[in-house]
Amino acid sequence: MLNELVSIIVPVYNAEKFITETIDCVRAQTYSEWELLLVEDCSRDGSADRIENYIKEKCDTRVKLIRQPFNQGAAKARNRGVQEAAGRYIAYLDADDLWPPEKLEKELAFMQEKGAAFAFTGYEFADERGIGTGKIVHVPETLNYRQALSNTTIFTTTVMFDTDKISKDLLEMPEIKSEDTALWWKVLKNGYIAYGLNENLARYRRAGRSLSSNKLEALRRIWNLYRKGEGMSLLESAWHFCAWAVRAVRRRL
Image 1 (cartoon, helix red, strand yellow):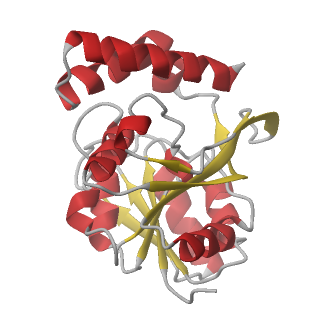
Image 2: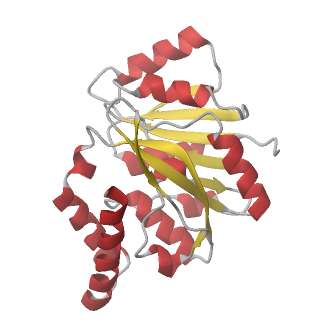
């Protein structure tokens, strides 16, 4: 097993209700060489105090609070985390999602086996309590740029990058809605391949995500990625959009 540091980046905004459980799932990992960068984006709730108290209580120096000077959104929070990361590997985790204890260990071993610069895994939808619903999203063995345009199964909380193979500059998330998908496309467009580990190694807590639960807004975001982010023609955008919509519906049935 690789003995390399993994920097886990978590953008935190109004996550007081879930953040303790999320930190706990990281501290329960079977792979212990990690740092957890909690980028606090000027929450209006008690998220920052909750994190500070947690760090004082647990005395775990691997858990670190980074404060943004003002609210700038998830993309800039993740970018700040990448800038301050000390690890060779970058992993993303959202503030209300969860990992099983073996997530890091299995994904790192998978990346080493494949020689991958970019990896992602399967995941399970969960309710507001973080309990899995039994609906598991399976992932393909690999995705290139053209395939990923209509197959958006890459879920942020499952992604890991090797910065020995991909520069941090390339990992800067664009300031556009659905910034995570835009980043995957940017990386893949630069010739990288995303390797999928088809195991359920994350739980996606769907409740309370106003942006994700707003179906019309989700449709607009994806459409704008094709038209504005990728600069596609109307016809090409419509083709990929329809393919994306079919797969998105299948994942949720």
